[in-house]
Length: 94
Image 1 (tube, rainbow, N blue to C red):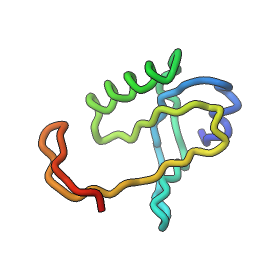
Image 2: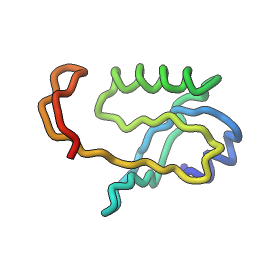
Image 3: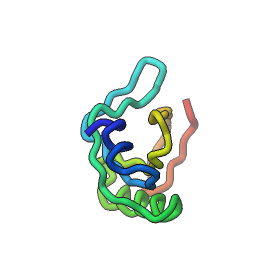
Image 4: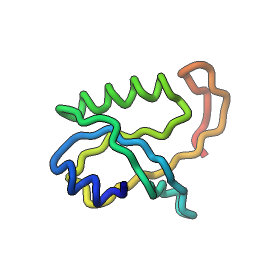
């Protein structure tokens, strides 16, 4: 599914989505070409908690929590340099 289809199917909803196909532009914007709705949530706090749980269970999958009122997904990718230890990171942002 693409973002516009998700917005139409789930109006005014907090969602946890997964990027099935995505790429990063030259200006470090993450573009989600194909996404799946993982869960509908009652509010932003519930969406964030669901996101955290899923991210801990599946750290290599690309999850986001979003509200469908947004016309476009504006996801800025950050690059980190450093050593990751468990869930903590000792790093400096590039």
